[in-house]
Image (cartoon, rainbow, N blue to C red; front, side, top):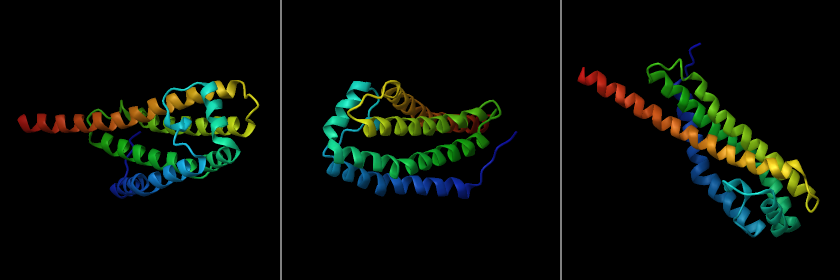
Length: 178
């Protein structure tokens, strides 16, 4: 099974990713801070506990929790798709140039896992915010775990791109020397 992708898709995913980074993310962040009254958010943390999630829910107030939920089901539905498209497109394209890419083809699932855990985090945080002040049992425990795994897999995805670039440059240098 050989997977290839056209440059136009890689460039398109890159442009979309950059537009989100430059224009959308700062606006959503500013809107969130302004409406909720805090810049702190569970999805921006690497480590937090279920009790800290409830402390945030309390500090947001009712309107802040509503805004938080609205953002999870508007912006944060689209953002994981955008960064996953970017990461998957570049991973596939760089693997075309990397030697021995057949062994690495499953690495494309790392950014997909990041999106899965991002969506899981959104679902869990939404349940906690909706049910507040009621406790959500296992959900409040699983949500921080999903957040941590999201950050690990998304970081690994970017690291994978860097490793692929280094591997490609290394093989080009080796060919020049030979």
